Image 1 (cartoon, rainbow, N blue to C red):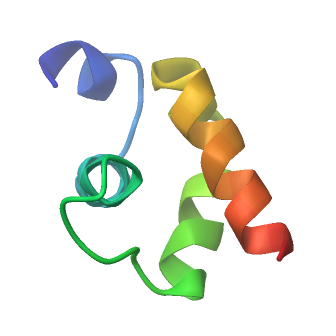
Image 2: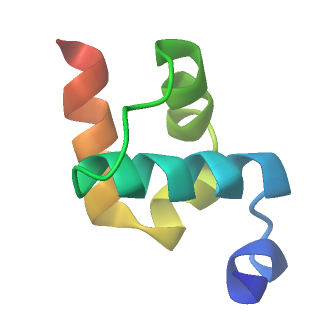
Length: 62
């Protein structure tokens, strides 16, 4: 987490990424669409977790 924040990822987006990762693994519900859009519009989020970013992108497109 420290590396993600050091790379410029805002703490609120990091929290959303962690929630989205848990949802991706089936442990919880997906965050709201507006929160997923916040992840997609933060360039550092893609750098932190490309695979999760792609999964979120596919989910938002539905």
